[in-house]
Length: 393
Image 1 (cartoon, one colour):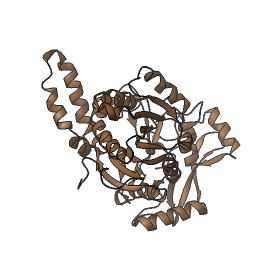
Image 2 (cartoon, rainbow, N blue to C red):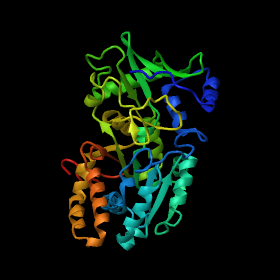
Image 3 (cartoon, rainbow, N blue to C red):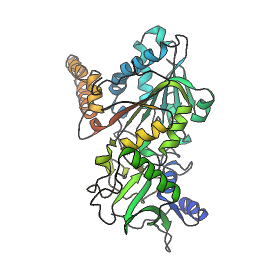
Image 4 (cartoon, rainbow, N blue to C red):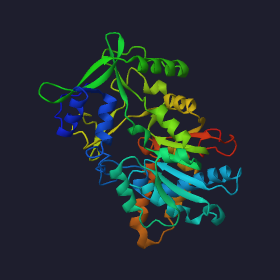
């Protein structure tokens, strides 16, 4: 169902007027999230955690990072074998509030001292508002060398190590595709005569049409799916190829871990999913209109695994293992961690119960446990870079 007309803030109206009064949905989403002064992330307005707009796995507590660290160390150990003197980097792209980075620093304290001495933490944050928040949170995290960088700067000095993209790719601006009168159309956002935001649609540009046809042909995807009705809508992430290219240029040898909501094409592009996967989230409420309150709410779209894999392969990455988050965390010792909570003394009962609830949420198959962990490698042999919890690993 297409959203109703919504009021347009002055800052966004200025951008739309400069663009001739209308922009593709992907441009609207980019402005709503990343405009430096008014965007949800660009301004630093995003609030992540139980008291914020939405929760992430790291925002539930430090156990997520503690479970992830053995996997990271296994990958770094494998990467280091080719050059024992090489500096090793843990790169987090889009670190959000900085919760994961903070907890990784703490969890790495028990690592092998010789390996630890070679590790640095690199945070890549494009939005100045979020970067300021991360710097405030991490100002006392001095156990590891820590620096902020950009993918462009890393391209000039590529790293060896592990790259983490946690709940990042779902916030890349997407195109909205609509099945209208026997053809796929591109959704646009425009100002109506009353100065309000509303959606419209136009024929697909040649470049987008060719991209969709190429990726669908390679991935065996039928778009639209059989039995799609008039108005059937989905998302298409044209930003993925450039993102994977930039990430590849930043890494000489390493493993990329993508953690996000992701679906196989047969579940993503289905006639039953008639309004796509786009979600607007604010104050722990989902299902809001994506046109409402631009810059005040998060906008996300699930990933299609085949589309992500194609973009990665096309830009220098080898596709590796994948697993659901619940399976990966159980393989990394979540059940043992739950059992260990029973050994805590009585005066820590409240802490134990809170951690137990958080750990169970991490593997809830109806929630965070359904996240996909997708791995890609570059400059490395297949041996030694398997993912815990992946089938066959």
